[in-house]
Image (cartoon, rainbow, N blue to C red; front, side):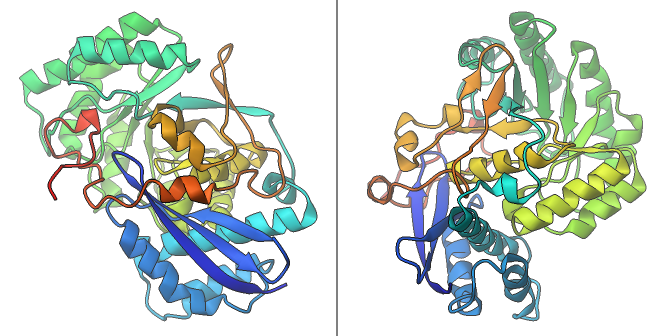
Length: 389
């Protein structure tokens, strides 16, 4: 079996663009799909896939590890986040091909299921004004869809430090959400790396009595050391790692201690193989993984394949249920939410267990104004397109 070509498809998905690919083979009708979504860099990542395709055309797609290494090593320089996202798109597509060729889901190739469903948490649900009333109304919709957990960033456009009046707004939002949901609902906080160390600790101490599940990316992405000082002093468990693009960064995270929730992003890391490496590293450390996933439905399927077979898998981020309704037409499978426990169903068809509807994709072309900017006032509404020509 040989790879004969790569097709790329960009989608304007409202507040964000997505990049999907198909890796074609010389076996009639056999191809694999992947995703390379990176907020604000869709065309750049698409170009990176084109730069790297020369290293896989004519190769056996079932030699997944060798192909991923070739795409990484052959250019001699490290292209960072974009490089690994492009690799991930192809690597996942090759796993899809392998699973389809053998008639089994990817998780079966990785040791089989350790669970039949996984707890999910809602994200992208609060397309509303930054008020307690707006968030309460939005979280009612979350609960109506069956979720038992949700993540939010209530901090507006704060950067570095947050004033007491702004922190008051954040606290009021969180207290109102807690009053609406009751004590058993999990509330996760995404700080979006916006605060200094001392400010992240101050805010965490103030908000901890509300009962928060985790404190995500509390401080700068420039220095890993900062997250450890926050984790040591924070009364809320710290989670981080979504922006890491190497397994070694997670080794450093484990080595320095204080963080037991690792958030690998399979697309940022180069795909399934490296995410499994992080899961095993976390397992040896006595920690859990909770993969980041703010891309499209193919990336969702990747995370759920991992959820099926990784023993130390904690919880899965889920945007799909809150994207525009037409996005469901882009793919052939979506997880369901069990309202009794807030769990997401897992794919069980061969390969990724999902396919693309190319005609539906073509109806929603790339939008250069579709991206998320958390430093823009009103970003919580996730409008995406800024208008203009």
